[in-house]
Image (cartoon, rainbow, N blue to C red; front, side, top):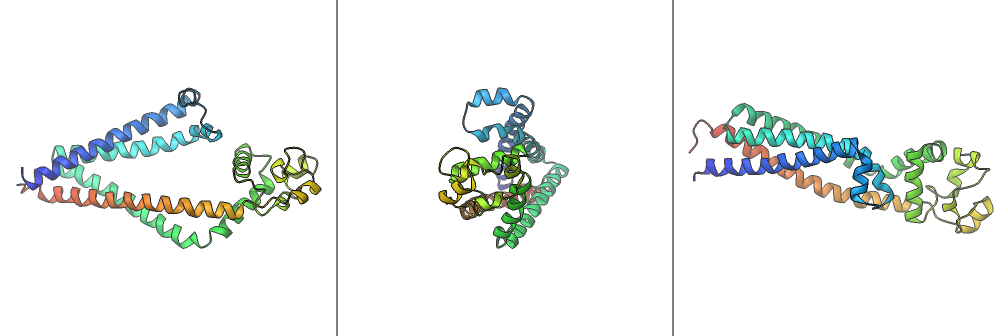
Length: 239
């Protein structure tokens, strides 16, 4: 078996795996989006965040569709030795690679401003959306419950907020040690810390994990582009 044939077989197998994985992800995304209740029954009661899978379904559909397309182009391009399919595969992977590099550069530039960005988003959300918007309220309730904290910098973040004004000038129960009506005096005596320090640590922790995964994906994309270009250039004089 010559070098060209060996690489072509690897290209076919690798992209076949990508195609099948994308098809599974696409099917799961469609299932979750169309019949989220059935999906939750099959998965069981894992956590409160499971209900958000209905929204994640559309993301799975998009990623699955891209993977199916890439797998098809790469597999068929290598199998049929089609220059057209191979160059299409190379172009799509290159576009994705450039987008990922650009996103990484932006993330690195703004990582030092993570604290100010977090406050710029979370502060107004607590004032105007908490207690009014269901999704924002659920996110903050889960965060405060899991991290045992109150607001961003403390109970003062809820002063004159929508929640504060519509609940008899009371604070969320997470701002007090007891799960009851949380008044100003009780919030002061409880002295529960804000969520900001823990949120910042959590964001940086997961940013490192995401960065490592992204680096691995970029390496695979570079390898895929090199292999596809090798096949493209050697189809006419294959060994």
